[in-house]
Amino acid sequence: MANAMHLLHVMSHQSDTPQTIGSETRRRVWGYARPYRSKVAGFLAVVTASSLLGVVPPLLFREIIDGAIVTGDRDRLTVLGLLVVAAALAQAALAFVERWASATVGEGLIFDLRVALFDHVQRLPISFFTRTQTGALVSRLNNDVIGAQRALTGTLGTVVSNAITAATTLLTLFLLEWRVTLLAMVLLPLFILPARRVGRTVADITREGMNLNASMNVTMTERFNVSGAQLVKLFGRPSEETDGFARRAGRVRDIGIRNALFSRAFVIALTLLGATGTAIVYWVGGSLAISGSITIGTLASMGVLVAQLYGPLAQLTNARVDVMSAFVSFERVFEVLDAPNPVADSPDAQPLPAEATTGHLAFHDVSFRYPAADDTSVASLETDATPDEPGRIVLDGIDLTVGPGQMLAIVGPSGSGKSTLASLVPRLYDVTDGSITLDGHDLRTLFQEELRSRIGVVTQDPHLFHDTVGANLRYARPGATDADLDEACRAARILDVVRRLPDGYETVVGERGHRMSGGEKQRLAIARLLLKDPAVVILDEATSHLDTENEAIVQLALADALAGRTAVVIAHRLSTVVDADEIVVLDEGTIVERGRHSELRDAGGLYAELWEALVRGENGAEGGAGIGPDGP
Ligand SMILES: Nc1ncnc2c1ncn2[C@@H]1O[C@H](COP(=O)(O)OP(=O)(O)O)[C@@H](O)[C@H]1O
Ligand SMILES: [Mg+2]
Image 1 (cartoon, rainbow, N blue to C red):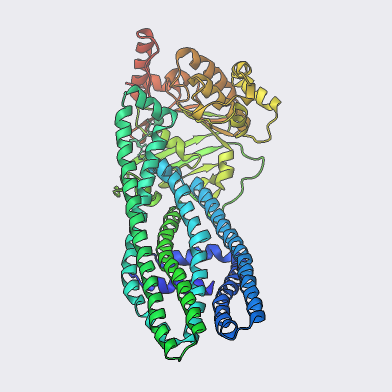
Image 2 (image 1 turned 120 degrees about the vertical axis):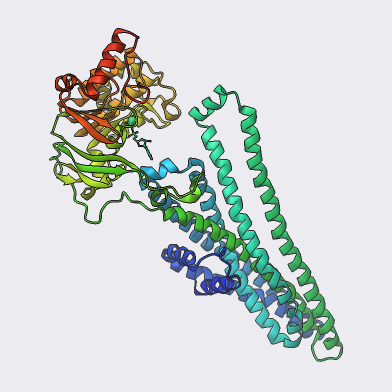
């Protein structure tokens, strides 16, 4: 490892531009390699043994010529010939062990990296995901990790083995005849100098190529999910889509060609160098042999060694380029691993007492603004990476208390901050000022997983995984029996529907539940909530997407689900909140009215206005007046 580290050190000193790989990145890569120290040591031992073996055959050739052919000793010739074969066999065996060791280390390291990345990303706050393009992120998790993998299993292994081979070969050459060797080497600097520049260019090209690949992925993931595909079809634009995609794919193609040309120019230059070097050895060495200062055996041996030297040198210089581009992948992976997580568990987080959650929820003078991009996201994963202003205040001075088992209703015009308020309870975001408590504990002092296990949320458009009905339900309670599922589905008024499905609980719901109707999906989400059995339930306009008939069934299911739980209900229709213990009217992020239905209705404020509109709507048009995104 020390050797490899030294090598990289030397390499990085050859190119000190801002575009090259920071020592920090290198340190982190080695940090990931640390658990594999013993395997790495074994690898280095095998590589060294194999490199030493590599100079044995050329030296045996020398003996064959000088010690057997010239003297006419046939027995010696046979023995030496067999020795050459034995050396080749031993080298073959070692090559296998070497590859095993490097692959185990490389793949293991990538495994660690991949799992760390997945773990980190899924714990990032929701604000990261609202800003990130899924395709770019997936590409980062796939292509870049594979790029890094290539670096370690292939490139880095060959770099080390080539370095050692080159060193031993060079040393042997010098010991055989240093003047000729020196002459054969004078051309090398001519090559190394441009190689540095090409290396940088290739690293840049690789970086650009990775970005283009990601942008191609973004198009595919956006268009090839059900909603995207539907939009493309409904607007009748498949040809434009293909053109746009072809433009991106075309740039990927062009950059691939440039990359290939640059890399190949490199190899060609080295091959020329090797040919010239070999010629010099035979030319100058030949005249030394004529004058008798070296033997023909030595000359032949040097010819083989020089040819053997340029191979590893060629790969080595080329590998430097590969290592550079591989480190680009590492940098891109680390960039995601470094994405800040402002909603993390505090180091002295407290567990909630096991059975004691009564569901007493309180907001104390809470203000909130959405975090700015720099605080939550990785710029290169966004389309529009311009840093934005810290958001404006979305909630201001909110004071609320909901007692155990009580129901708090939140109403207000669209954009007044209702959903935002609800998202603070399971800590999708942390409050900017003030605090929220559950049973008297500040949410920030609790473990997030534990907090979230006590809170159930149903939104307008609940998400289902592309999996079976049963698996989606058990996501809330992995150990649930079929009887548990039946019970939850019955309470959620979905049991009949599930029973009518072709495979019952084993039926796959389709991507994001697209094979279910809106009402069915909503009731499945309620069944899932019941299985979770949370102390606090939050409904964010849970029925606003439904038609009247479906809404009635879902309302029934919800009434059961809320019984005995603390509830925060964001209401689309005022008729659903008349029974609330308290109604809070939000407007532009502040509470403008609060009280019970009858008080508010008679108070003549915003609530009365909304109520008026509702009553008018129900007497007039079908469906009633909505208060929410589609409301007046
Ligand atoms: N992820 C977000 N980032 C920045 N601003 C947001 C985000 N989500 C909502 N907002 C803004 O916060 C305000 C309140 O939104 P929201 O809570 O969704 O309102 P409501 O649910 O009452 O319709 C709106 O002005 C909206 O534009
Ligand atoms: Mg909303």
